[in-house]
Amino acid sequence: MSSSVASDDAVPTAQEAREAWAGEAYEVLMGVAGTYHAVITYKELAEEIQHRTGVRTKALLHNWIGSVLGRVVREARRRGDPPLIALVVRSSDGMVGDGYKEVLEVAGEPPVEGVLEREQHAAGARLACYRHFGATLPLDGGVPALAPRYQAAIERRRASIEKPPQVCGRCFVELPTTGVCDSCG
Image (cartoon, rainbow, N blue to C red; front, side, top):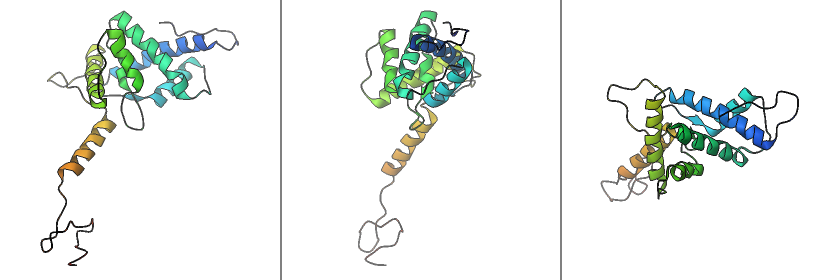
């Protein structure tokens, strides 16, 4: 995958820019894969590849990053590498984006049904990346892990679901967050 653009002062075409960004994205993601449980956000990746290539865009990220990462998916498949785009997560929730379905399509795998299933697939793919690209792994070989921000959200949800509401011992009404019964005081 070549990441070179025209060396003169000519503005590269959109195709040339995307090819250059894809080449750099591959390099950046191989670096991320060298650290166990590391991920990178779409925004961080976009900034880094624009910086490295010197080719910038004012277009909204979601209008161009998908085609760049699609090239990375196909290149990883061609090289026999695990799907590096599993390392790219949204900053808002720590999950892979909807474009992750291309990983499954390129690999000839059936689509996954739900968000958690997609995230679990991506976690397995990330572990494959860490192993393939030489991350220092724990003695047990490592485990697939959801992106930290997504895992934290799941744990917060579980904690709120698993904790039964407090009830007043006298009138058996659910207590407000203050812990003091509004009826009994």
